[in-house]
Image 1 (cartoon, rainbow, N blue to C red):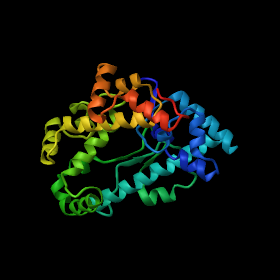
Image 2: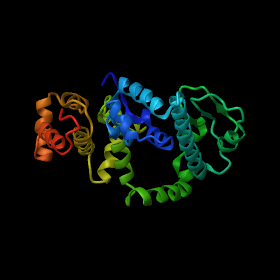
Image 3: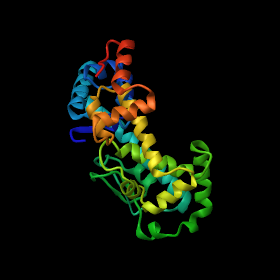
Amino acid sequence: MRGYLPSVVLTGAAALLEALGVQPELVATGADLPELALRSTDVPIRGAQVLRFLSLAAEATQCRDFGLRLAEYQVQAVELGLANGMQYLRSVCGKDWQPAVVQFRHAAPADCTMYRRTFGPSLSFDQDRNAIVLDRDTAMRPVTQFRRNAHRVLEAHLRRERAQVEALWVVRTQTMIRALLPFTDSSLNAIARALATSPRTLQRRLSEASTTFDELREQVREDLAVKYVQQSNLRLAEISEMLGYSQQSAFSRAFKRLRGVTPRQLRAMRHEADPGRSAE
């Protein structure tokens, strides 16, 4: 939906405010920003709300460079994710494996020693993405060559995330649907493409987990519907459009089947419980 950003742009803002002695909820309220946007990465928020939030945060913390501090915090989070990715790839490809290049959006630091130690010698800064780039031989190498190491790593991960190997595809699919649904095409073809697989393979994987793409998409849509109605200040018409309903009336009927009340009724109940929040 045009004019909106995913709340991932505010990743780390709450922790940074707390570290500077300011309650994040107060700043969010002042910016008319749903508190959920500070705890979740998939809440649609307006660009103007983000700018207002950063302005109020800078004022409340008396740090004119609040935005820069937040950017630095986010850089640290990105680099941690890339470092974890390197650990996984080396566990699969061998401890001496090196990527073709590791790309960073931020500028090069004064000392790259730790970067080279972690990511290897091929580093590229000021790029348009953060990425670990594989050479063609690595990317095309049959998975069977890594099966033993990959199985060990994936099993360790799946013990934490899901009891069944098939559930990994369910989690990945749900995550991708949740990321794309409010903002762009979330069809089977689009989700399969985002997961670097074919629609047929994705359907087969989900079938092995005793579910279907349509079921997962509807589950995510229902979850986001309740989340947006209960915890955001988005208008019901906006929520309806974001979740792909043809009309707000269709959204209301679907919501009532799910929750037993209409979105407007649920908002009214929320307003009664918390008069300081808007009912629409």
